[in-house]
Length: 116
Image (tube, rainbow, N blue to C red; front, top):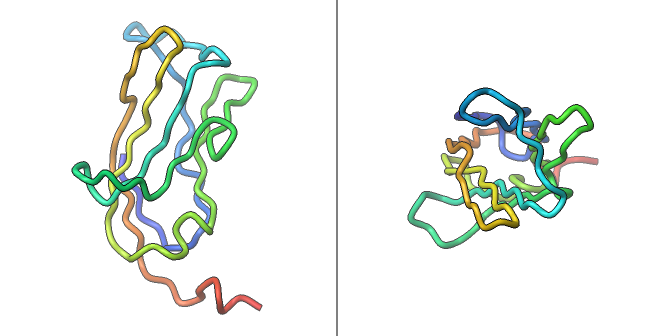
């Protein structure tokens, strides 16, 4: 899934439930890790943004996983396109990429320093 929005905007990106191949909901254990990672491209070792459970990723009581970027996450980044993925790492050692896509940061005119 690809996203495009102005640099420095607060952006709720994703809302989804984990499901197995048969469409049954999967509940994460409290010890399972969930990562939303943004890099310039797939070859980069430099993590630009990373959200984890409790830090930008929330799981609601109805089982939905929400990923949200705050204004400060992108306010100082260059305009352009970045890659992201969402990966789960279970306590049993399973690592699985759930989704990947791009985030394109577009121009805006009111910058963080302009806000009074």
